[in-house]
Length: 217
Image (tube, rainbow, N blue to C red; front, side, top):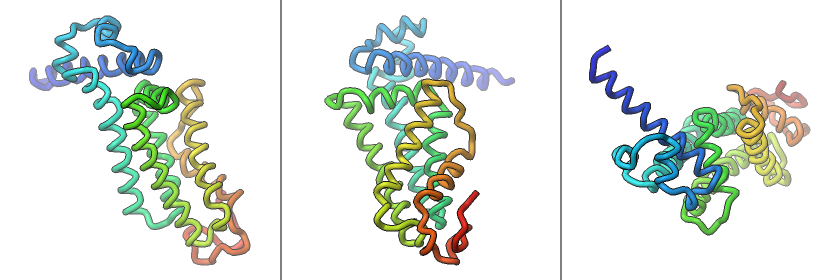
């Protein structure tokens, strides 16, 4: 392996290690209560090393939450633009949020700690904006289910809440109870969800993957 490649991989490993330690401490103690000294001592690195990779504690927060959450919002936007079938679209949305947790569990624990923590912190306000965007995408997709005749308009808000609840329950079980979060879970959950909310008598014959009186299995 070329020396420059080895150096790049080593550099990346150091940055990932610092970020992982910081995410764990932020989740356990809170972002404001965790100092740079706490992070470097737990990671067994020096302050200049942390500053080299992340510039500051704020830079760490941006690397752990801001940029990944912005990427998740972009992925949801891509799903909306590229998936016309609202059933498949909602499944892909759930799957994208599960993938965010699978990719970095410590980062996801930090995100939940901020979201369910005091709403006076700058971190909470930022995270809430991303959460609102994700919720809006899901609401729009549930409305597409209504327009397709797959669920009744009167159940749309409850269906959206149930979908959001499924994401929260399954990710929390994965992060804190060592439950599995297997690929494909998002679509299976959507199929099960629509068994309860489907407008059986009104579902159009032409709806993608559906026929009158039939539900996905």
